Image (cartoon, rainbow, N blue to C red; front, side, top):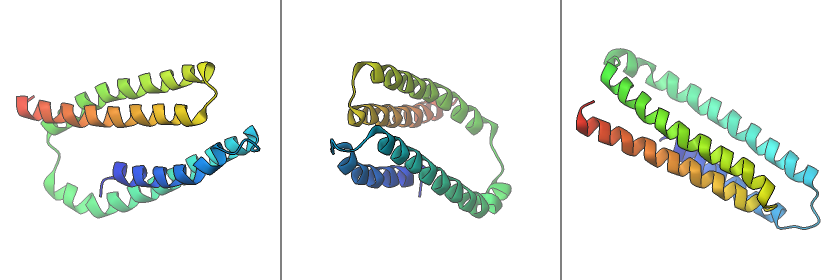
Length: 133
């Protein structure tokens, strides 16, 4: 299973739990900050654990298969462009903090750019494979 899908499911489950906190006007900002930090730490731990498990299981397959330079080049080119989209989304979200006070809107904007960057990255990989770069 792709790590992006696992993180997406995990993030949305945590977001639905946190949505109750965001809509409560009695909650202070320190509670929201501590909730955000705990979610980031939890997702990081899950990510590292899954990457370790997947790398151990794929180590033998990767050693037998070997890496193709063309595949690495295609992946690097697509990742470079999708990284710029993700960076733009981070900047838009950072400047959005100045314009709006709704954390829910900012989180959704950031998720939109995350999904957009992934879609562009995968689409560019398909285009590059088709062109034969």
